[in-house]
Length: 272
Image (cartoon, rainbow, N blue to C red; front, side, top):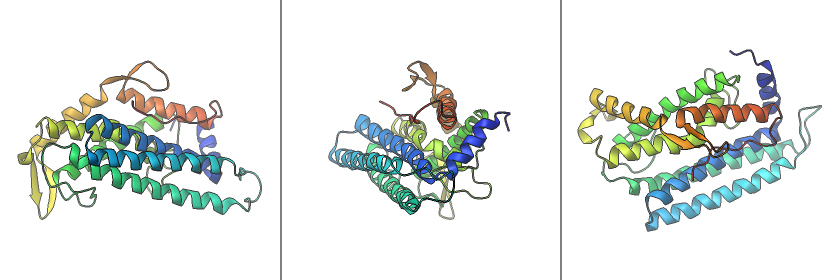
């Protein structure tokens, strides 16, 4: 826990203002959809990719409209809840629906970006039913822990989120902030290790219907994951070179500045 109590009190106030909370959550999701669409367009120009790209663009447009609608609602942080408070609750439900639709569109196209057929037919989390889902789940867990460190460094309480609901031991804010980073880091690494043949079928084992990486496969995957974190890019907001690892912290600090009122809005991490 850092000494910056102002970030945490600002975080709590923002969390209690439902309309502002939903508007921020929507920006996390819009950044995620943008990055999914960009990866698809970079990697494949086929019919499936084009159709998924159009759907993702449509969902992002709906989220933009939702942000405008929610930001026009009164702020509920002072006094009793405004009668229009249920509108913000409904907007959060709509946002989760758009996020889910976007994920379905993305992973339907993702299988066509992979050069090995390892039985991937969509996202399956518990348990992972094929090697690709193993890599996605493992990568997202690794990423979540890196984002968890970043939000703590920036002074936040990682268990108070905006998009994800609270739960005992659930790092909701880390899960929020990692949404826009999933595709540039994890999805890209999965494509790299599969399409370059770094990982193949022999690097996975099936134990009672549950797939998992072998020891050698895990080592190879971790090497590529660390290499991705250490890759330098131009940060889309600050316009200077930074590694993806550093970008995680920069996004957390951007969020802190928004929470403190030093920025008019939070700008998600969006690749080009």
